[in-house]
Amino acid sequence: MDPRVNQMKLHEFQAKELFAEAGIPTPDSQLAATPEEVVAAAEEIGYPVAVKAQVQVGGRGKAGGIELVENAEEAQAAAESIIGMDLKGIHVDRVLVEQAVDFVNELYVGVTMDRGEGKPVAMVSTRGGVNIEEVAEEDPDAIVREHVDPAFGMHPYQARKAAFEAGVDREIATDVASVLQTLYQLWDDNDGADAEINPLMVTSDDEVVAADAVFNVDEDALFRQPKIAEYEEDTKSDDPLEQKADEYDFDYVRLDGNVGIIGNGAGLVMTTLDLVDHYGGTPANFLDVGGGAKAERIANALDMVFSDDNVDAVVFNIFGGITRGDEVARGINEALGQFDEIPKPVVVRLAGTNWEEGMEILDESLVTVEQTLEDAVQRSVEYAQEVEA
Image 1 (cartoon, rainbow, N blue to C red):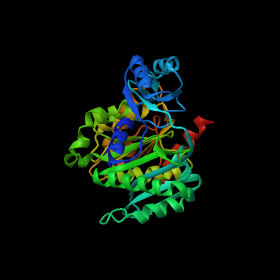
Image 2 (tube, rainbow, N blue to C red):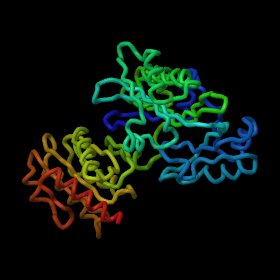
Image 3 (cartoon, rainbow, N blue to C red):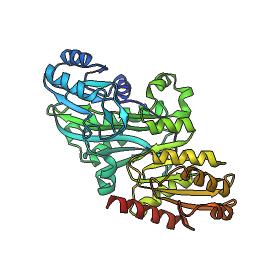
Image 4 (cartoon, one colour):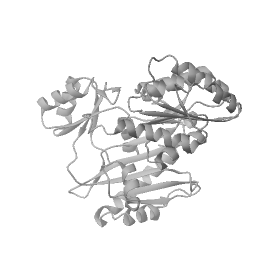
């Protein structure tokens, strides 16, 4: 997910509705909110079925949010276990009851914007069913990327080329290419930000089925996507941190690491994320407080990051233009002064307008101050690693 784009993230069941309407094969499914509805849906669809929590987080299966059931008794038990559970900090109030897929292989297909190339990119991998970010890091060649000229769209030969180069079996390569081309067209027609099917399951009959679905839309384009906009109220995040970000009017994306990041400006925050990764850390979030951030706004940002149990250390990267370093320093002191004990170590780097005044104001009994961004990031990564150890 690209933190630079304000995205409306569809739930799995909503994305699958779009996919099915476009002709992408999806399993039979029904939405349910009670154990009774789950059992009724499962009886109608036919066992075995998967009962899947409808929350917008990754790793649902490992966290107990997806269960495969073979009969009504198991369906009832799964529903009672999943509905109402706290899944990575999010309350589950609905599940998708879905026909189980008897598969022999799992693939990945996706479409997003490659900002480095300035073009959309379609992707195919035979390493489906696992975290695709980890695949990209561990074995980049396992993901085939095909860039698309947005003026002409994705040609059929490009989709076929991507499938064959990824090593997809010849018996299903044409079907996989068709799914990829349809996914790209959906992405393009609906102002998509990210579109993924992971896994795209392959059955013993050489059919492909979208067993999962991700579809995120550029929020700023909803005015020309009335159909997608109808989903908006239902896609409000259940994540309390993302709700808090909306309340504070922050640009915020929750990530999987343990180094909390606060900055003023998307480019500055992205640079900080990259440096955290460069120095061996893992970012816990993207949090842009915006320009002109005064003391109260900085205090709110710290409140958010401290509320994330995954965060072990925090790095502030503030470059003053409109934002004044002395205001930021007062906000940090004010926020941290409320605690008898600072919950997480905080590292601060200030530059730009009134940065020297800010450095003098900062209470170094509450924070660690570094002169350069590199030193600040390295120190925050060290703090986080000390907690992990």
